[in-house]
Length: 107
Image (cartoon, rainbow, N blue to C red):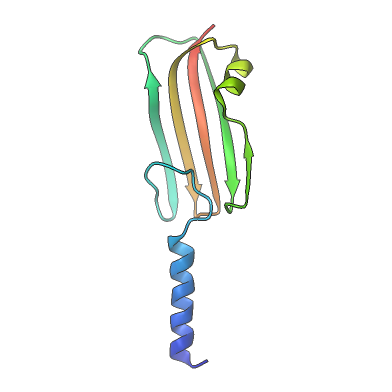
């Protein structure tokens, strides 16, 4: 392969690696190299006594694990009435991503 074709091939590989994210949180704005966002999903404005967070993780878009369901969060914290819900996302170079769900509420 001549030098010009080799450089073009390397450029295409670099573009593919930097433009396609293997692991991503699935929604919201995304940065090419790094993403960290917090999105308020629900809120009543009422004060809350308890707060709990749980996350799901993805590595290279190949392996995902975790439990961030409302049922899991409510059982872990004994929250009966949810007053606020936030989602936090983190993605690094398309290699690692997570989505954390945080709920606040009262017994």
